Length: 74
Image (cartoon, rainbow, N blue to C red; front, side, top):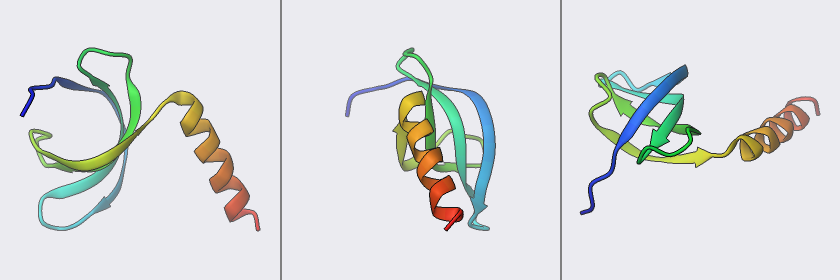
């Protein structure tokens, strides 16, 4: 498996805690020294391990925000 680098540039918040040492978080993450993206995924307590997640550009995050605002204003 190819190696990759990541840096959590900013922790924006914890969405949930499964009680077993893993939290679902929204972070700004730089993958392989690229521009940071919004990232939602599960992390262990020291951020050394992660599970599958999703990354969003600023534009995608803005669209998601608008969709959620519309959804909750119904």
